[in-house]
Amino acid sequence: MSASHTIIGWRLLPVVLVAAAAGLWFNDVQDGGEWVLRNLLPLLLLVILAALALHRGAGHWTGAGKRYALGVLGFAVPALGLSVYLHYAYSVNLNGMFTDAVYPERVFRYLPYYTIIAGGIGFVIGWIVGRNVERQSTL
Picture: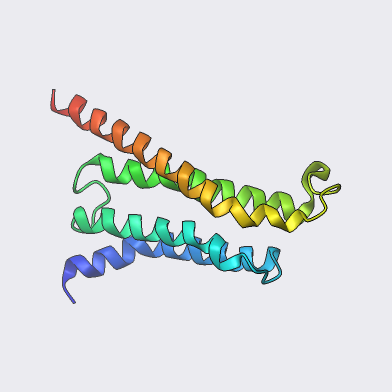
């Protein structure tokens, strides 16, 4: 195992741990329901994107420029943030959000699709911001 792979592993570890903790919590909130695996997909994509960013940067977040790092951050905000928020809201019935719903657990049926699409938009925004930051730093 080369030194850059070791660095990538260590720098990826926090992302993996946060994704694993969120995944375990999602399973707990959903009581192992039928959409748990589907809701883990945005977390898996976050880990994959982070690994690609680190790989392209030879173990450094900004080694290949700020585009990848800010793109991953842009993906993480809606993909992880929205998923965690809606799982929290479901777990505590935030402001009675799920009180009158006939099937309140169905919020998790399409949530991964929304978070992946929003995460993709966030990635593109982060990519554009990173590109502009790189361009400004070379002027």
